[in-house]
Length: 227
Ligand code: DX5
Ligand code: ZN
Image (tube, rainbow, N blue to C red; front, side):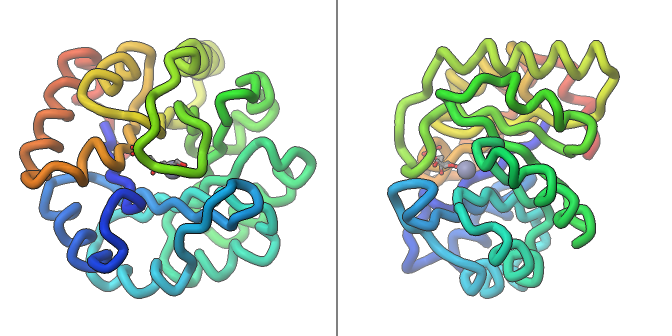
């Protein structure tokens, strides 16, 4: 399985130190939430921050773009060190050309679906993506409560993957803690983003270990997942 702490929950005055803490906690990926104050009603940080923390860790950078003007943002984030770029299906007709652009830039592609959006919106792209992100809160802020109504979407994403023998990962993001991670693991998720659920723990290593054990207990097949 993939455990991906979201840096959004860390103190921005200590992003470097917190990146190192996330890596030494045994987490797999670092999830980086980019907000532009337009696609979502909040602003987080930009490519300069991603570039600054890139030399501090070998972790895979999972860059979640909650932004409107992606045609001007993809290259700066790729140059800053993104390994995977997540774009939102709500960008509608922009999605297809953006997928091609990310492919051309040689990076992995994630496609995110917001809680009010039907999972069917992602269906036309399933063969082109590396990961499907089922948002379990409305994006914009960390520390919100998990929306249980999103769980059937994870089940649907898993059913399509099985039926069509596709390799995409299924990620969940928003309100993920020990309990909701267990529910998502049972529904078919493989990658778990957690901000406050991990960074708020003084002993993040123990928190990552506990989350891993809980996820495994709820989906033993994840022990064999190799990415
Ligand atoms: C929400 C972001 C999430 C957020 C998760 O807009 O996409 O990645 O950081 O934070 P928690 O785990 O605190 O809900
Ligand atoms: Zn995110």
